[in-house]
Image (tube, rainbow, N blue to C red; front, side, top):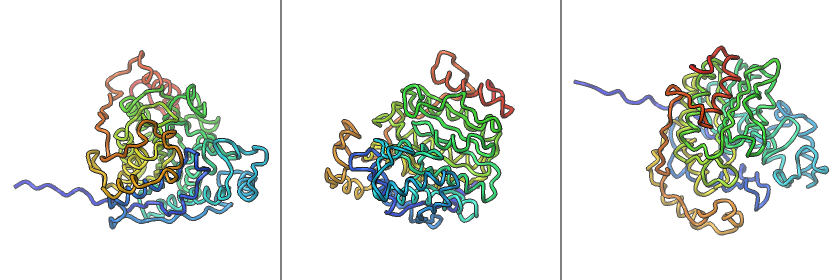
Length: 417
């Protein structure tokens, strides 16, 4: 008589959430719309993901100035405070008051709350209270030590990483799959050999911030701990997944991190107005589960996931980050699952004002359409690197450029590992 064993129970996990996170709102027209977060949280709730006994809801505190100073210049933190209090950007100093990062009254507190959420999630992971956590409001990876950039004021990913190091982690790995280069996080740890930053993104030749090339490999004391895969436009699911699997697992295995922190901007989607990678929700879901698998294999199961970019707030962000949350909580949602009717009804009832102005700016021809299933019926098959390197393929050229630069610094062969 044969028996089948039940799947292992999910390990303790946390979701960072409070409605106060919706206060991070630059303006009614700005693409970083809090609607993205609200609809994601509503969809996560609609699927009952927060009701499982192994799930803990973590309320994000406002990070203190001292906590922000773990990675940010105190003078910069003071400037953000002044900008919020006076609605003045001091003539554009510190990257504030720009089109990307305009000033608003709740600028400091709302940004510090996002950072506080990732910080307490990191603390919960390191203490052993949970093994995994997600802050889909986080992922502010463009903020540098002394400047705002690319819709990002405080770099919550960097704050969390530094807190993990201060608590005793010897090595922390950071994997960034946003369409844009994770330049702020990279720059903050560029000279720290304890932090491995890996960013897969659309090439800076065609996309903001214009950085993130294969030859950016870390400072003189940290060679090989900055890793960049600059992918060509229109890479698609298969190419992106091929690149991720060709680069990330070998490096994580060699680096042996104590914790894995990841950034899951979903602006690589084919309908996103700010990038041109042409991924699908299905491909982004696969990436989330891949990162979770890498955390289990190479980082003792410790995983802190964050959100990031993503500017199609109806059709893409809620589904992508609900799948991310499900991956963190080890409660996967099949791509053919129907979206609960209550969520669809809520979206259809939103007014134009609630949709932050002219939604056609953000979602193009899909402005009036609401998704009804959790996937897009995409084929996410990807060709393994072991199958061979095609020197005529632009994606393979990008992969090999990165492997040649970085793999030998970790004792890996750029061709075969």
